[in-house]
Length: 329
Image 1 (cartoon, rainbow, N blue to C red):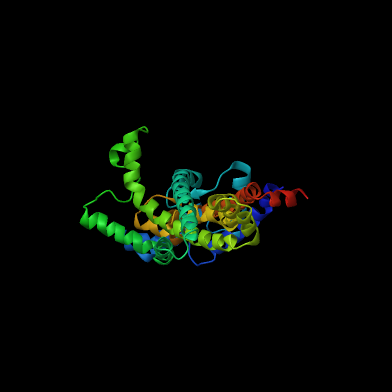
Image 2: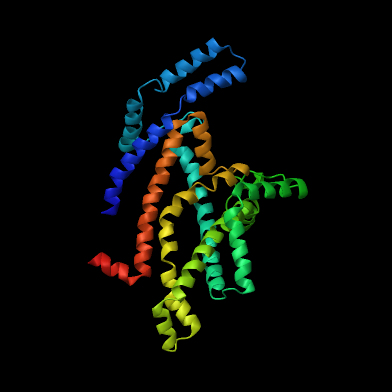
């Protein structure tokens, strides 16, 4: 039922997204004209003539409604998401190249951030006002206030100018690009992506730790926790069996909105490291008017938002029997 109701939502989002993307003046034909003038040495008349011809050839001269109908009709009838004018290939190929690696990278960061953040949050809450709590709170504060792009710039500076690292902006070294998977290739991948993983994990860890600490402190002061202690349960049993599951509720619901954020691949970090992920593709396509790439990626993010909310509801039902009972009623 939830999946069926998502279809009209996606349709409405596609209309709004397409209209917003097309709202600013200019399109990819204008980008071509500027390139011909600035880099090709063509006169304005020559460049404008070629731009107009390109606009007609690719249907950019048609009304906005016609362009949208052609685009959404191609998706529904043929699974055709359009053609990328900048990458010079079908949009499906652009998405297929960037989405899996972005999803894998994002999931790794998210798992690290969730496990470490929740664990540190429990550790800090159960040792309130100790030096451990103070240290972890300071780490959380830094993680939530220091901009990602600043951390990325500092790491790039250290790698390039202090450690003479030359391979920045790729997932693999040249010798491993088309090679089959092996332990050496995996280590090479880790060597290239660890800065992005570290930065993204640090930010997510800080948020999860801060929320978990605050929720767990509130839960530990609840009446049912005091009752459990009075019945003779050990402190660890009270915390892990009764308090932690209830304190996890806000973090579980957060999973419904974190998936699209994950797929953007930490846009500013990925741009600084020049990694071919989803985030830089969205920003780059918007800058040059490659409308079908931008619209398709935004549709992907919209779909992941819906899927994320469904997953969050399922996880919450598994975590809390009261949700299952209410849902069944």
